[in-house]
Image (cartoon, rainbow, N blue to C red; front, side, top):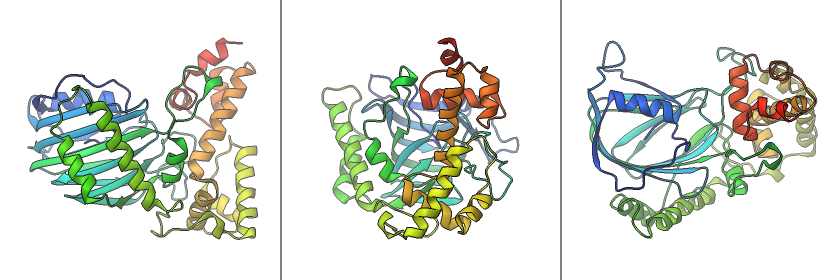
Length: 360
């Protein structure tokens, strides 16, 4: 189970063997899943490449495009941490611990999971379009990390869905087949615990014994994934607040709140390339920063950061179609580094910036 298990590589079709994974194997996972690993039990932070970290069985499946299912039944020989890198795409994950324990951290929230516990995680992509990580009022989301302490046995399920799977062409930017449900599950960059039914937990435990690639396994995995999403939706309430842990339905907003939130939304849409800060936007909304973040997500179904990022990438696409060079389009859209811009652009539009400009 990693801090950011993102489906960018098809899984193997054969039965998952019993494996001993070394530090060198973790280096492969870093490239594939856009994460970095640390080994805090060692002074250097990283032991020798052949040293065993985990041993057991890990199976992967893709129930549908843009979705990855990872089941693991392992023993952890060395405590390790995994940290999402800037290249990790925005995604939603459901993590279920069936045995053992794990700890997640995201958006200033820490979530320790024990046997039988589950968490919903909503990760927005950090990039360089907003003020520094060290600026307190920045909209930039905090990093995602997970810590796995040494323990005899961990059995877990990780279901990850990309928020914006790549599409063949920017003009055909299709939504995720589950996008209406994913929007209702969004936490605005954060994580929270929720409960799965005992019956579903038993089914998930049974799934650890399924041979990968056997007839019917793919359909049964898809069924379990839909049940996990359904039970998470039942408990989401459509307006979960990470800061206050309470449900605030959209129709609870006053007419004044809606008008002030529309003012903020219009400011982001008119001037996406500006270096907006949460404090400045909160003053515009006549709210505290925490109230603005909560009420904006309640009103628009997404975080301020996610909305601003979309406005910036749509502006960049229009500028490229008008003939601007890639670096100039990135600068006008608020990006300082072309590499980060290209990564975010491809993840959102499904095509590289230079390919859009080449069409002109």
